[in-house]
Length: 101
Image (cartoon, rainbow, N blue to C red; front, side):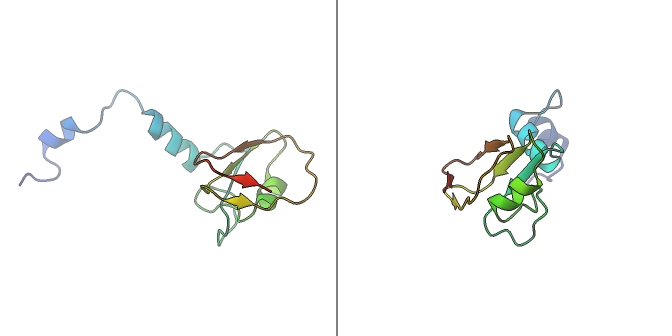
């Protein structure tokens, strides 16, 4: 069995010329833009980051600045959205299947 860090394996995995599209997406969530807020239904801690998302749409919408982006992290979830919203924001559901009701 080859050692896990043998030079042979290091040269076969990945590349060092640029970051992949997937790497860029992951990094953009980990090191979010200042006007981005994340939401996941039932999140136990609400900070608005990818790792500590808001538990409700309302919390994310209240905190996001005008022109910002709310990223809904659930797949196939229904968010309860009550009220009138006048702030222009972008909604994004990268996993799809999200319903606002």
